[in-house]
Length: 45
Length: 386
Image 1 (cartoon, one colour):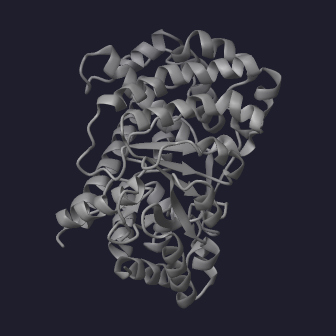
Image 2 (cartoon, rainbow over the protein chains, first blue to last red):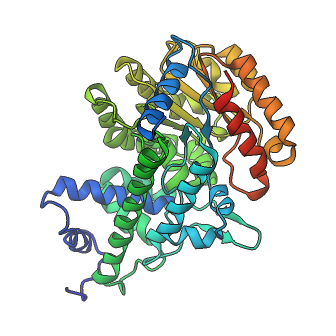
Image 3 (tube, each protein chain N blue to C red):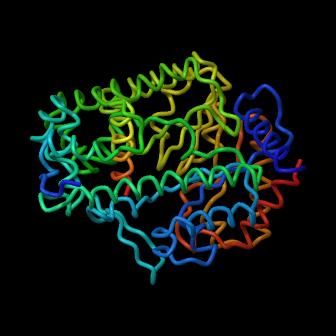
C-alpha cells in the first residue's frame, strides 16, 4: 500500500481511496454510491 | 402467534391504520425510542455507542421487553465509531449525566457554494471532509483511511443484524432507519453542511445559491429515488414503503417554506400517491403552521408523526392523514402506571380506528423521559385493548 500519497488531494487522493474498495465490484457507479453512503454516515456521526 | 405470523399481523394493522379503508384489529404502537434503549438495557451510552454488539443487544432487549409494532430507530442512529479513525463525532457523550449533546456546526462556508455547485464530489473531498474530520490531513495514510471503510462495513452489518433479528426473533417489521428514504436537499444543508445558523443566514443573504444547492442535491438523490419508487416492490419485512423527514422546517417562515422546502417535498408526496405507496413522515417540533399544505393529499398514503402539536387538533385539521403520536413523554416519565394507561385508552378511544398509530411525542432519549414500568404497562395495554 502506498502511504506516501497525500490523500487530501483531489482527484489523486480521492481516487487512491476509492481504489481501496476492492471488496466491491469494479464498477465506478457502485463505488461512488458506496462513497456517498459513507459520507452520509460520517455526517450523522 | 409465531414470529412470522406476528410480523404479518403487525404489518397488516399498520397498513390498515394508514390506508384508512378498514379499522385495524387494534391500534398499532410505534416506538419513538432512541438512546433511552441503551440506558434501559443497562449499558452506559459510550459503552454501546462504541460497540456494535452492545448496541444491537440493547435494541433487541428493548423490543423483547416491550413488544412494539415498529421501532422508528431500528438501526444505528449515532454511527460515532465510523468517523473515529479520521476525526471526532459532533456529539458529546456524558455518561455521568446520561446525555448526548450535538454542537451546531457548519462544515462549509458561504464561499464554498461555488465549488459545491460546480463539482460536488470535489467539494465533499476538499471542503466537507477536512472540516468534519480533524485528522483528515496530508499525514493521513491510505491504511488509516481504510479503517473508516472497516468501521462503515461494521455499521452496515450491525444495522443488518438488528433489522434481521427484529424480524425473525421479534416478529417486528422494518422501522425508519431501514426503510427507503432520501433526505431532501434542504434537510441535508440544514442537518449536515450549514447547521441552523448557517442555513438561516444563507436563505437571507444568498438565497439563489442556497436554492441551487438544494436543487442540485434533489436532482442527484431525491428525484432518482422517487423514480425508483414507481416500479419498486414492497420489501417482505416492510412497515411502510417510504420515509419522509421533516426536521429543518422548524426555522422556516412560510415564505421560506414555499421557496426552499415545499416544492421538492410536494414532489415526494405526489410520487408516493402516484405509485400508490405508503409513507411515514417523521417530523420534529411543531408542524402546525404548515398543515394547510397537506390538506389536499388523498387519504390513505401518509402517516404523520405529531410531536409538539395537539394530536386531536391535527386529526381534526388533517383527517386525510394517519396521525402518529399522542403519548406524552412527560406522562411516561413522571406519571403513574394508571395515569399512563388511562391516557393511552383515552387516545385510542378518541382517535383509534383507522388513521391513528400510538407513539411518543418526542424522541425518547434520556432516562427520565420514561419510567420503564409505565412503558411496560402501556405496551401491554395497547396489545390487548380492542
